[in-house]
Length: 175
Image (cartoon, rainbow, N blue to C red; front, side):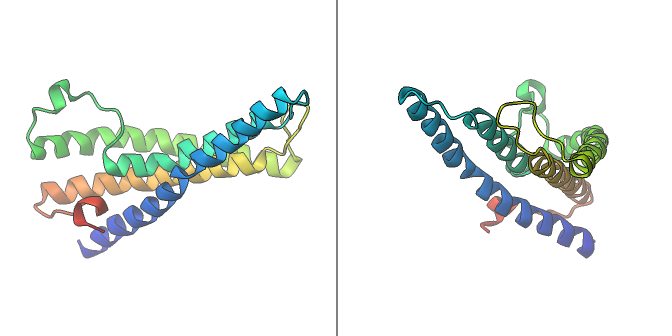
């Protein structure tokens, strides 16, 4: 039990740090889009701004996803779920998260395969700027991996809760 609690707390702590970092990527995105607006107004539009903004958004979304899951900020149908007892919620979550874990495993397999291809063949985007694709694909695969770790931690947290052991989220524990 202690090993499982340590795993859950370690994954929570790491994803919290990565998620807090990812929150600040919105400012980098704003900067790129601001530069895009200024360069277009000046009559010399930068060709790289749209793709770089998309790459930053990928990092923002995928690196922040596990933190969002940890904080319980993901979308859930509360119409029925909200009326259930905490024990029933944990039991249902423990079953449904298995589907998410399966999906994330398939997604991670594809992400690693795509990243490997991009690295081996020097894949570039089909645009005028032609950036290498491996950095964004590597960030995407890493974000999917972190989401898989967080989904596993949520599963273990629910199992521990059903067994009478409570492992709070870090925000709940005041950390």
